[in-house]
Image (cartoon, rainbow, N blue to C red; front, side):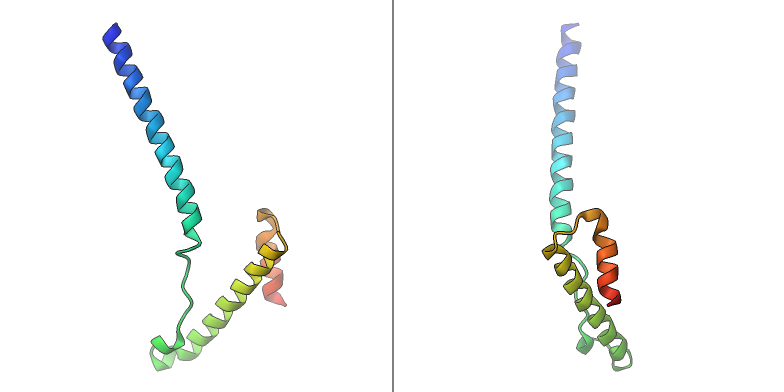
Length: 91
């Protein structure tokens, strides 16, 4: 009986430790998710026949970044952020 309770306590400690580590990974992963977001397209690094499309994509990306910064500056709540950015992109 004593041996079972020691094993149960050890198992519980391992599972709590695992849960804490997994939680830390999720939190840090969400912070660094924005850092590794999509890179800006470099029109000079693509084949000449695709350069015009790459320039359009880069312009879209820059406008999206500017709208995201405006949303940050306006302190838009997370649930309204998508609609705010969509309206900004339409202007």
